[in-house]
Image (cartoon, rainbow, N blue to C red; front, side, top):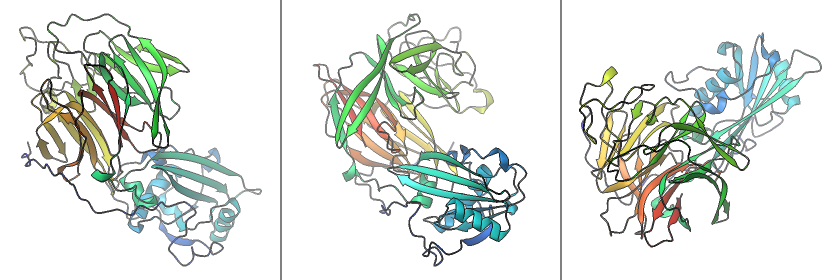
Length: 488
């Protein structure tokens, strides 16, 4: 175990301002030759030299579709715009070559920088340099999403065929070094909007794409049914649109003395799964048009909540998950003689680390500026603590409630966390936004005004279809008029 860091409650978090300008693919480059679009591209060393050995493959590049005629190429020249940070170019080139030119040795690929990646310019460049293939790369940033286009030209044929493939991905800390950073996140810039949302008996919520159209939906689980919504943005105004609704399948479980029931979501094999603490079964969700359906499936975490590092199970008769994670794929059974609400104290298999009992947990992989991917772990406990850990460093802060959601909102390599307050009945609740840095430091970014109701559920994702994650939270008011918060 690593030593616990002192609580880092730091209102008024200050961070160095990042440049806010966007880089378009056709923006002027910094070299003298690039200042003249008609000039020959500036050639760089062979691709892949100097790339960090621990960098993970990037999903933006891994979705490219090279042409069939690429097989058997002898050499290639790759033409791209200069990166905003020149120190990121070695990893950029290595990533592009690995994904766009599979099977071709990196030493057989030359890289050049130019703003002219038209078919004719690529063909001319390849033939003059003696390469049989040319690739032209365009990168542009729209809102907080990076668009990539790669054009292939076969310089060995006449006429020369070409092939275009496109990909896109949310901005992250590495891509920010290539195309420019997102607007800096400050507490004074946080925007919290609310809308009336009467959802009695709410069990849980999630932001996920369930219809496969590339845009995320808001999934709201209530006692009688599950509903998929879209949130449309018109300027500063938000509008909630109901897409589809379906009643719960399965049979209710007998849960003695349950404090509350919850529903939880996970993503497995590209599908969104949902389960309930008071119902049997694990179900994959499908949204086709205006029809939402449940499909019974065999979950990797039967009857529990799946994480990459194991399976958590709801403690019967309580309102939280047990702290001991079980191996994925194993069906959960309560050991004989274990009382309701009591955890099995047997040895953890495969050296699985125990986590505290928790209301909610987020386990996120966040790409760093170096290209590495770090695992960020955060949870809120029944004792009111937010406990966070990254790269062996741990921090915690008290006074937190049951709600928790996490995402790298501003693509800086840190995990942003939304929590609620630790309150007793009748006290006002509130939301808090924390930032968990790669150095393990936990700081307060923003705090909402007091809410009239209880905030027990939150979620995070690209709900507004901008590439920039937003938080949502549900405020339940006993006297009616409950609210949905959207915080970005």
